Length: 124
Image 1 (tube, rainbow, N blue to C red):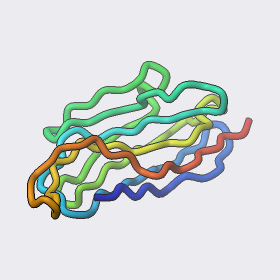
Image 2: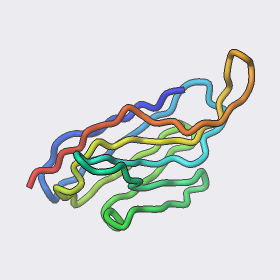
Image 3: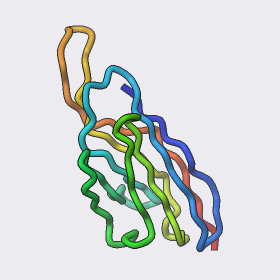
Image 4: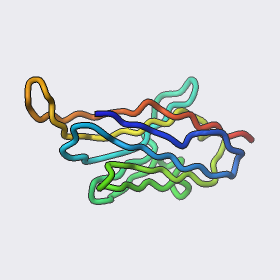
């Protein structure tokens, strides 16, 4: 199972970016998905999460500016980021709680997977 994130880049303050993440592999079911970020010299923080039914949670710092959504048919999660601020500069990671099939030994297992990270840079 892999999570592949895309959509990072550089934008000026006040601009927008859309991050996407696609889960692939021997997936049986995907429950909670989300985005976390880590800025230079800071701890990693949860930005937003979404349940399979669509219930969302946001960090106070992004509430009203960021919108998380998902496509269950494609095992994808997106993060629309508007009104970006320099403090939003960070590496963004997608996460997903996935039930998947293991090949050896043949069994089902559940794990929280992380994507490789995509850099978002907001200039003032």
